[in-house]
Length: 147
Image (cartoon, rainbow, N blue to C red; front, side, top):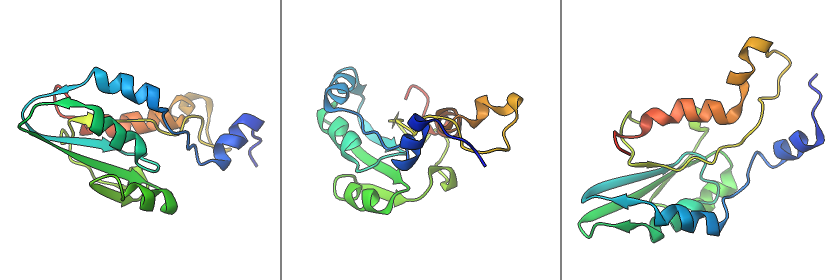
């Protein structure tokens, strides 16, 4: 049986759900520019979808570009909420999805952080057991070149 630090236990109870604050999202949006054409924005840990929706609404994009927002969320209640503010939401584990390589213009990644809780992880594989590392390695290839 694994022993958890209280902070890790709290993260586990929240399913790693810590939404990005509005001030941070506004600052990120100020720095993004898109060219003409279709732009696909993906949040593979979208929670209630508010972060990607806010980001999309503040992005200064070319008049002739179309923004499409996509979310993936494991929690059923949050996925339902996200479907009200994003174009498309899939209720699933992001690791069980197939997202085309190079298909996304923007990847908004605020995954759960911390170690995977298991007794089976040996020292040489501990870095790979970090959730944020796993999410990044799995989803970074979905970004298109210059995304």
